[in-house]
Image 1 (cartoon, helix red, strand yellow):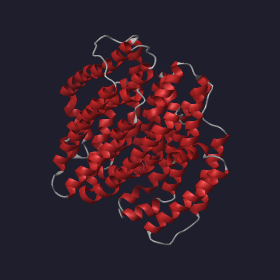
Image 2: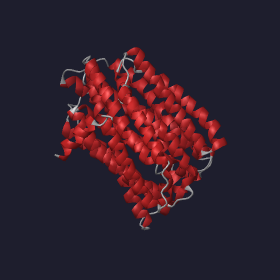
Image 3: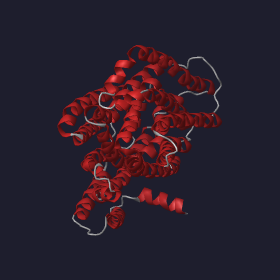
Image 4: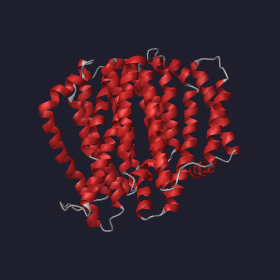
Length: 484
């Protein structure tokens, strides 16, 4: 677990910085200088881009991770990497052919409530191309067990780009149009950087020979592509539908709440970057003992750390919204509580998603994703017009619980493993006890002082009880190691 712990630590550091800078952008820069309408437009464009991205990458970034370790020689591995570059070009030609005939109707549908979405619709496809190839080259790095710099570019770079552009916008050096064009240029600069770094780490020989078992790879990529497309619907359809069914302002309010709740996933996002190729290697070598160890440890450690973040967020949300002084954004405060429950549950299953994606049961992900995407669209169509943004939050929570439960059942039945243990129950009890103890404490100071005092109480109580229950052994060892 040494390489996992080391790179997870550095990945978590960059993700932590990314979330901090993202919070500055989302809660201060956008609301105060650009306004909720323009913020909603930018978020909606990026959300639509995330919906398109799986169609371009076609699941190839996952195929690299699954099959790279199964090839025994450099020639076969190189053919897989080169195959992952030119295949999306064929897909792009089909997408542009489709857009040539149907782009007008598509644009009118997504911009029915916000004309600016029509003006800048080209952003969707341009950023989708950039992010698709970024993910492919990032997978090159991950199979070499080099995830830190790629994770920095994936998580921190876009927030830094936004911060710099928002600063220029706030100083009146650029207008909204130049902001959008600069955003596109920034995404392609990131792509160039990761291409250069990937080639430095590992330079494949250029070959147009198809990799061995290419039909199996294409079939796997196709199913992962369909699953990824459905997963993108689950992740971004709520923001897209809010923009279409309500207003772009509500997209901004909802997205801020989602951003706060998403902090709970930060430890998982850091760990999975390096765990995924290790899971693939364990499965390819049939090392079930190591696979179970990865699953149990990732589940316990992520649940413990994410539970701490869950408490920090949900016990401080009211004072936090008062501190940032954005009354309109506070209308979505209940979204934070609802969605954060789903995020915590997702972290409790550890690296289960990586195991399914790299196992012989990967095709089930497609059916789970399609069912979940269909459910998400149906629930959002019903709940958003009736309840607004909180309706979208309940739809998200239901889908998260549903799809993760299906995955747990699949792995328990198929591989006879699961992520949970007695430690899981102790962590859950710890979270519940700390939550209800501190929820009853009312602080009557300013919102800033309340945030500091309550956070300090959470840290002390959670750390003491974790130590008492013997939950933090692995984490304590890593902290002592890095401090020394």
